[in-house]
Length: 216
Image (cartoon, rainbow, N blue to C red):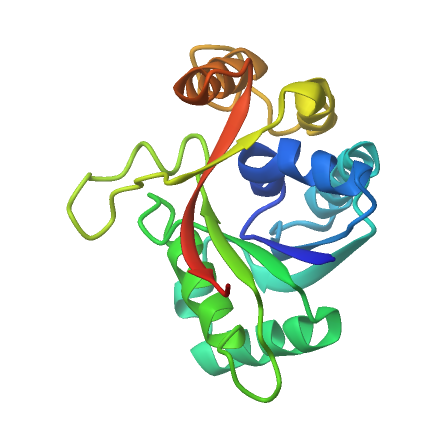
């Protein structure tokens, strides 16, 4: 099975899907991560992309695709350009399963990526992705105004108990992005969320998702 993860920014994929990526990779499935935006300066770009590759190696990611859209400026980017690149990625990977950010996240880049990903993954031209899920991103999903149209309501749980240490190790590779608790982008809070999500289904650690589409 081929799995595609869209990440608006470097580290979103680890925060939202890190444990599940490690789980599927360990089971022999191919995971491709598409990082959509890039840092404003060449120095920061080299650092964070090196961190991303290190994190992905820990998780067992088969391929990392770096796009070159400007961080925090996706709203100013022509939608036709975004859709074209997303379409190219989806057609190249031809995933059976996909993970995308939540459209109601605080950061506008997340909502735009979510929209363009869904445009690219329309069930046309022979493309039929069996499962599409939305993931939550600490410091984005929980910080926006919780209105009816953008609330994150998980209805799928992934037991990541055997893989949680890999998730923390991968996140620790993002030294430029980590903070100290109580900041949500800290290993302590990442662990707290995973424990809370796990407690809902009676396991030590879990990640949650919203089901967008499932073909039975």
